[in-house]
Length: 98
Image (cartoon, rainbow, N blue to C red; front, side):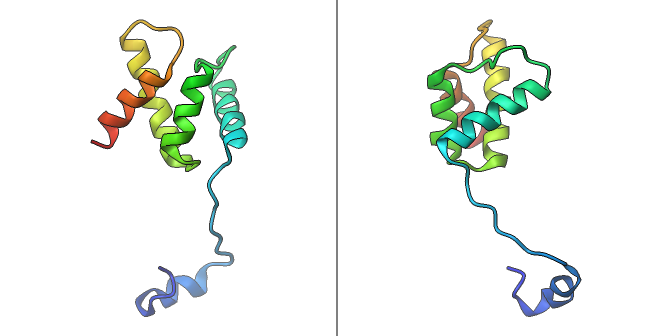
């Protein structure tokens, strides 16, 4: 995108351009655990199926994973569940990206 002629000025001002790759399944698991920890959670509120669903649907994309996890937490809370399961992740996906 930055190689387009109309963005040449912007490209020259950037000191570094990078392309982020998607996270692996293991990296996604650690990322979710990290985000929950810094948010103050004592335990990760996703079971193994929920984390797998976050990875499968989010495909390792950080923004998609964040949005999906946030909406999943909201859905599980609204349904009075303490743990987010795969079904909650699927419901979140349907609401976020119909």
